[in-house]
Image (cartoon, rainbow, N blue to C red):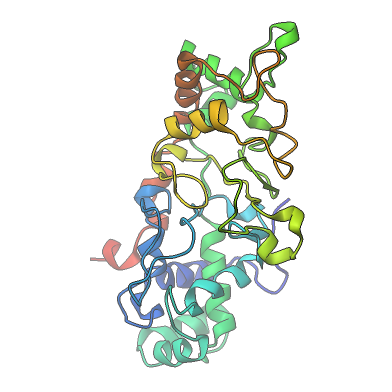
Length: 321
């Protein structure tokens, strides 16, 4: 299912305005940060940092999420506090520790930049710039950030032949272990499901026993949601380190080590991870070194080199120079 609000259809002018705004440093209180500061195209629209730095020099609470295939998503952030992209884009703009500027002030600033009133008129039929229209334009552009030409996509289309390690990794990724039948698996596809390798669900993945970050519970107020975070997409995953909501893992090897050997069995652990093992009467997946390597080889198939170089997503100011 795609998510395009009836009052904000995608238009050529709207997408182009959103693209320009995405790279516009005037969106920040200090005129130095843009959306692209924390969402760099070459890193699949992440920033390669554990935590991003805001206008006041402080660090964000959570790791910057990748912006990819958002057309099929309607809840955003690690805790799902934003319903729809139009709401999502407002949070970092107004957060005092991120871009640090109210939408009213931003609207006035853009109104004083010669090019913007005309661009808003072209996109929305009015030269009067408002926070709502800024959010709509950014949302339009972000919905076009579609990654669909990775080797995995080509494999599904019958145009790419994986090597033996990639095939083993693919099988492990989607199969659940059944040690009593001698079937080994990584069970990754439980949460990272479908061709988009994500879901709009929240899981406790056994990272902690004491929660310094409540995760989804901060939104719902439900104690059962403590330590639950959104299932992130694995598209372009080799480009988006560090990993997890707090960027604690620097490499995919560390991520697999966690799921294989270090999951903390606890009451709030995702039911998809409980009693999951490749060995009888053992906790944890207990993957072999070769199995971990094979899964990583499959994950590398999700890297879409055309996506990170697509000029339609690049800074229009640089393209026009």
